[in-house]
Length: 416
Image 1 (tube, rainbow, N blue to C red):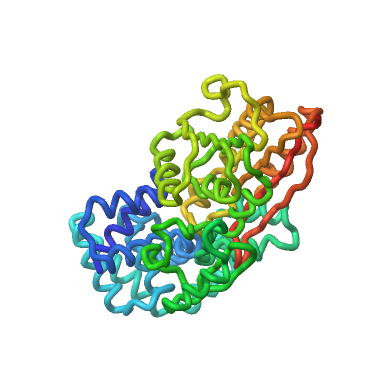
Image 2: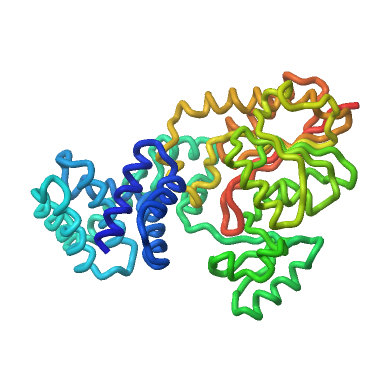
């Protein structure tokens, strides 16, 4: 266990340096030989520690009011506190292995501190957890400024949004309508003892996550993993055979594949990151679908547009990803309050640049995985003021629920 604790503490360090948890976890798994069980444990502890970081930091400050003499010891204690507070790991083993880890930090001088802190937590666990519940950052496990912003934006829903954002996310599938009905696919899952239910249309939610290798037909493109909220994008864009379609920020390709499943369209998929664009290609190959892929900046059409207007544009713009923090708990700790101004400029610049490439009568779907109004309806209202030939057909703010993550969609049409 001590090796997993050490690696998990390293994940927290990489996130504190500004790397995403996904990147940090992938790097740790590449650099160390781990069994399947160890890989799962590392992922659980890394994600769990960041999911509960507000509470864990509060408790650690209560246990050790003074600044700890080593950042490495602080991260180790956060990891061990997560195990003691939120997992079924044997407390004696967690403490013993954390002390063993401490032997390699600060020449072992802080072993006593680690041992005493963790045993003190076990003696006062109930009181410490109760105290944490009275502090907003600790109770909701989001930065204090984030809690305040959501409270202002959603006066009656903010607490449930935060609570949902701290849950483990559901695993939802999109059944390829061209190959199988959702009802038939649920029957195939049942035959493999995988419990699932249809949410709506082709969206199927599993009772418990599983490895994609265990999903019947996954390798053959019968089904894809995609959140129910994300599946709404392609449906809102109402593509039809023969249309010219632009997916302006395509990676990793979930929405790209969905668009191509719905109609035989001529689709151009862009992404500024060539490496991420390869994931789009991999997804399309698995689905048996094809599109034109180009590594380019959607905000600079002069570098990629051939002058032929598009009938439909999916503008999945860069955003804070505040609607998907339960899948990426590092996001809430990496974001800063002033990030939104810079993101807003990017969002406005991209949609303004894409608008001239849309045909008269064509539709553009402005999409984010954000729940912050300044990235969503406020951006759309400002866009409508800048473009007199644009009309808002509909918009929808999805807040995180048991069925989907947080997304925003605004469907715009170019007046003829």
